[in-house]
Image (cartoon, rainbow, N blue to C red; front, side, top):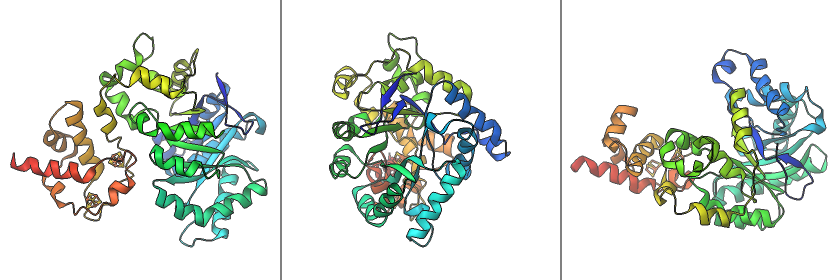
Amino acid sequence: MYYKEYGNTGMKVSAIGMGCMRYDEEDVAAGRLEKCADVALYAAEQGINYFDTAPFYCNDKSEIITGMALSQLDRDSFFVSSKANLGTTGDVISEDAFRRRLDTTLTRLKVDYLDVYHLWCMLSLESYERQSEALYGWFEKVRDEGLVRHIAISSHMPGEELEQVIVQDQFRGMLIGYNALNYRFRQRGIETAWAKGMGVVAMNPLGGGVIPTHPELFSYLAENTDLTVPQAALRFVASHKEITVALAGVTKKEHVDDAIIAIQNLQEEPVAELRKRYDNMGGTSLNDLCTGCGYCEGCPVDIPIPKYMDSYNQKLFGGESIEARLKNHWGLKLDQAADCIACGECESKCTQHLPIIDRLAEIAALRDS
Ligand code: SF4
Ligand code: SF4
């Protein structure tokens, strides 16, 4: 296993971490939690020592499963992180509710402290400012009491906005979605965080499944290697000097093996060097793909936005027509795209910062062509 320093915290963490949001759905539903925990234990046996979980993952079982595994290990042999925001404190926003949430997390994970506690899912500067104002003081208190070692931020903001947060020196680490699809627009955030001595953890290294399902578009990442395209995409993220941990979504033990193969003989390089090599490969349209993350959901006129944006992806891939994708894959028609009232809610939440309103208008206009 290849290990890196998590910023200037003194934590030496594995370059591949276990993203604990992908335990086997059938096993979770059937209550086979021990079987899921075996996968996390296997990851630890292979040298993975960073485990990232959160409330609500895996039907709210992820923290429980992860705790079943980690409680079999020495506490100083692993690092575990979880998350909190206004959505996890319950209907009443109070310090008591915040503490109850943390207490539940610690109890489920069977630990006395978290190594990293994230201010969770900051989609924009506005949401960061609002949530930080309400919660940051409570994060500091539980850190000072020893319940949390380091405070970090989990964010989907673009690099420029992240910079504005990072320079405030509130956080020792950062968790962001980062992959071969979006690395260009996250670059400044990770460079600034690294320069500030923060740990940087990358989630979603396979672009929400877009990379494995379209290997032909990303084959350039695997050129001159023996790696599969998903392995190469994971290696691409892990090889950034500025990124401390690339989180692999692990359902089966084989996924751990895949991740280990991906980082054999890893060589770290600054993002600027990687950009020189890769920016002209693959095509610029890859920046513009919807990853299907679903953060834009909740449209006031009930447009299933991820399905429409997935269908728009086909135009960028050069695959089937948008209309065919809507019909054959999603059972939808072009018409509903015209219902958009351009309120902008979805665009403010989109992790890829896509022009959803324009794309829906373009889809609606296909009815006349
Ligand atoms: S901008 Fe359109 S698609 Fe987006 S949330 Fe508003 S109505 Fe729905
Ligand atoms: S439109 Fe944006 S937020 Fe919605 S699913 Fe696609 S990438 Fe995610």
